[in-house]
Image (cartoon, rainbow, N blue to C red; front, side, top):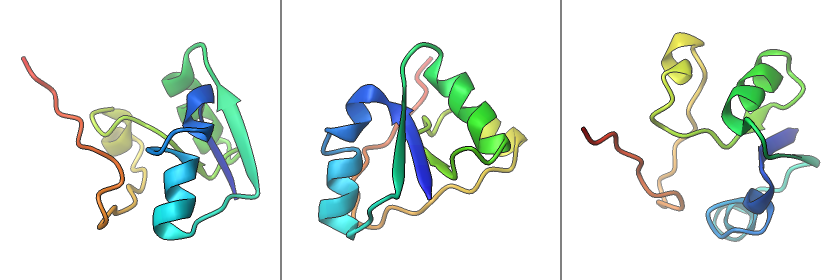
Length: 84
């Protein structure tokens, strides 16, 4: 599987490093993106260019596009809350 995310996702603990350390997960390929990362990732997911992506949990496209949110029982990733 290919995972996509911002360029720093590759080296962050809350990224590929943590996924490998905490869950033992390694991806075949990493697709780094920077400008317009969130909208580009959504397009790549819909086209099956990437099969996993680092999206913000507050992104309404998750519900709108019926994307599957993976569980994080070991709390590798912190919550992202919308605050008015």
